[in-house]
Image (cartoon, rainbow, N blue to C red; front, side, top):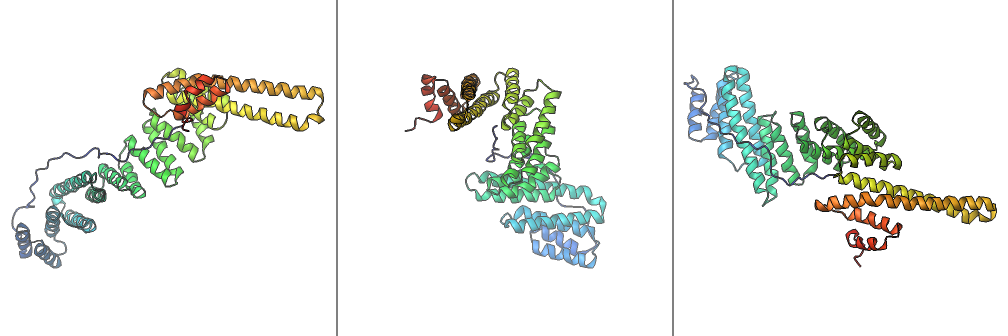
Length: 410
């Protein structure tokens, strides 16, 4: 069974390409409050401190002043647009203050909702694009990945239902080496509707790295519901069952799946691989053979089929050795007939071992050819072939695979 590793060093996917043409001057008309009018003038002059001071005076006089809250949000939005040197923590506090001001404005006057939504969309796109820019700079200076994560988190504060921002925050944290911190945004992204296969696989892999196999299994079972026939999801799920110590449960799942769809090569492969893991070699051989018949290009199925024959041969060899040891230790206590029975059983086991190694060779050779054609690592297969060739007295073939098996380094 092979465990696929997610590629975390990646470019961000699903980035926004949005052009917004907004009127950012806010509601028209003049206010009867001189502080509001003064704040508007200060905003045009980029005197943010004085603009906020005037807004606060207006709110002290009338805490229910929706116009003042809407204006406060626009002032902070302008600060975010023109003061890029804010440190990440201060910028995030500023984003929260902007969102709070806009939300209060709409709460007090629902007629402001459309205008506020436009302001927030503009703010979201800006923070998201800042995140993209910082992520791209991270390829040259890894410290920028954390800046990117912060920008994407700001985007989630502005639009909490934006699954894409959570995903890109997580990828930024992964590239910054913050694996544990990447888990919450990935969890949230999935809860918000993100359903790409990679997101599920990466989250499951992170759970495994954090020694949480049960959670990894839960994520992969959800992924299977979305991608029931995807080989990568199936492979990861199979590994997760084993790592979580739930081999029996996994067997039941795949046994039922095979009964429902006997010609599904993935189900046959997974069930056969679990049987192999459990040492039920004859059953494993049956299902893995069927998988190779359903797909003659199924390299992993050929590899595991060869492994099933070899593991069974090793098991038979162990039994032969145990009987031979018993015969040597107890020969004087046994009758000639008993000795002869043991010798015949040992000889039968030795021949069975040889036949099993012989049967392992064709699927292993097929797996090697398929994987070499794809440029994949075949050293484990060559090691298995070397063992099989030696055990069947195929000396020349054994020598041919020594280099591939990494056995001629000296």
